[in-house]
Image (cartoon, rainbow, N blue to C red):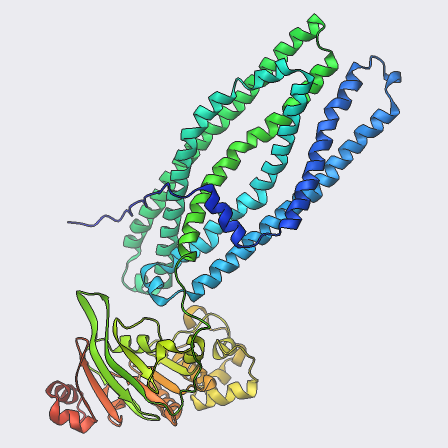
Length: 586
């Protein structure tokens, strides 16, 4: 059966409520005092806007221009100036509160993401997480910085206008309430539909973001495999789903806005007609009718924006749900545990078992011992679990059974940051970031290092010559994932970085496996220097790099099937001996 290229839509849930959104905002400690000040200024603005119709009524009812009071004009001008000035300042303060709250939210989410365990990122695409960080927080930002301030000022204006209207003429004001039950009946189901579609749209966007990030990061593989047509079709599936949801959302908003507008215009026409009859009957003056209509505008204008506000609230609640899913995920135990100096201590694995799912064990009862300043090597078929041992030592994962110890202390009881700071890790494809060579060498140190020191470690890693050949030398930008460097150059940069960290434990994961013979020779010389005086654990497919190891552990299907020196294993382990023969090492 052929698998569809069109992704399935995520299912929306209805469990999230407005109180959860408010709780999330309170969690980031918004500037409440500034918010209150902004709210008070907005209140002053609304009061000024409520005075204007009353002054206008007096002007209209004055039959001759000469009778217009100068003080009335002065108060009217003052009301306009107050409305303009206080409205601008109040609006800015409310927006400032929103911007700072979202800034704190993004910082909180970013810091939380950085502290999540590796298994979280095994289960979630990086693009999906970045979509939560950027897109979902943008939805909340739009609500807090734009829609909410408008809603607050509009609500004050609306309530004040309605109170005055009832005081002026309760019969005309009562006409407005005839439309309220109708609007509630219409808005209820529409609001639920908008919430469902908003959540689906955010999830679909995150899925596409994750897919696009993953594929663009491996664009060379796509091109070398002529995978453009396949990826184009697959991407079209994601884009099509986002388009479909966007059209559904647009249809609802397209229906909602005219409903609101029509209802408001109908109310305006009805009140205007009824008011005109009252003016002709002499029970209402022309000035009162004009004032009444101005107050009605004070109601209609904010009410027309409320539909957009409530739509944004529904989207923000969906975004909040997604963000909260990340924030409730437990982080690594940073800042906990004991700090110890690992130099001169013995590392042991005691019956370590690990799996992602019970039916597919990765490691089973693995035990080994690495004495101080010794070289311990792991060999065996690919997929046997060798790299998983390194991942457990780095505490990316926790053993299901058994334990890893140093100086007879469980490494999980140690301070995580301190533990990792004493480990140097060089892999087959050493990671580098976009930026300069200087930035990559100093990455994670937390301190600035002199150029003399940087050149010194580059020399130790046999990397100084090619760096000097670059016109900008240490300031050379190496591109995303170091695309401007060769494999051997990246490896030597990684080794220089390890020299700079001065690790007490060194882990080498097939560090020379993908290099040409000339690069391998230079990298191996650099590694030999780096290994001096350190406890070193090595994973190697090329057995020539580990023949001098103090102990070699042969791992098959997640189990240690033999260990000893190179010569001992040749005698006692048939499969290891076969590996040696294949690589012509005898």
